[in-house]
Image (cartoon, rainbow, N blue to C red; front, side, top):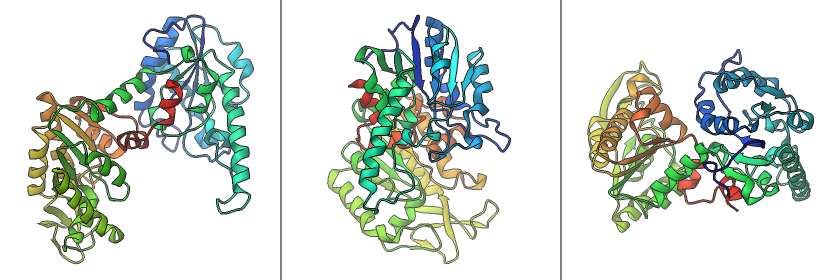
Length: 416
């Protein structure tokens, strides 16, 4: 694998996989350009070296069909403004030979949404997994995916993957394409390098104490991460909606709170494993309960073990916030994934804000703090604290799979 820091792109055509799956309003205007800004160091390095740039990305889930509402044509002008130069547009990513061949040094070509082609994701379309013909269709699609990746690769001399958000997918543009480039002509972009290093800091270069905060609504979606972290952390805070599954598992009454009734044994098993491994498991003891799922609902602070019927826990209570902060402040390595409450409602941000403030304080005292996952990132952005933690990850699913200890195809393909 080459290093983008040392690579000279002068006279080379570089095809770069970015994650420009940015949110758009009803008029096609970008509402958050964080992902575009995140890719700029890589894109500008190529252009400033004297290379020509081919940008490829997906947007949304068009499921292998052309959908004008998900066209990257909508973001062309925003990309041009960010780069400070004109951007050409290829309306068909699989038929951009001429446009790519005509690119001069310093010029930019943006390809249309990769996922307009089913070959990008490499999944058979219109056939159920239970269908006897599915395996044959899958095999055929994998061959087509390989050809699609080869076509994309033919546009350029060098491949750069700077899309950490899709690094956990073995798609044509994120992994398969890399097979068409020599080790000296494929590399990770600056953003990917930072993401991979941040995960490595969390999992391999641990400074203790290590505190991980896992929030969100369901235990089931976080079980792989929780189990992997159990062998690494000193303190494990489990909060958010999963609080009430743990409370009910221990005999509590949770009212109308979100609860995975089929995961009560799993919750008890996690408590048992934490005790066996000497991990300080921190669970909420009180919550802010509401009589309706609404920002304007009536509220009261109650024990998580005794939430009245007709009420539901929507945020961590003051005692819980205090316990969370006590486990975070002394930490030297911190991972936060998932909020402590329904932070989208201003009246239920207390738990998430307490966590964010404690992380900022620990970071000021020398801790390495990684915040990842869409809702956690939204939290620190909402509270204006994103620049006060060590690293904010752009990857949702990719970050979680990396923390679970899984190999990311988009990284492995470049490193091979």
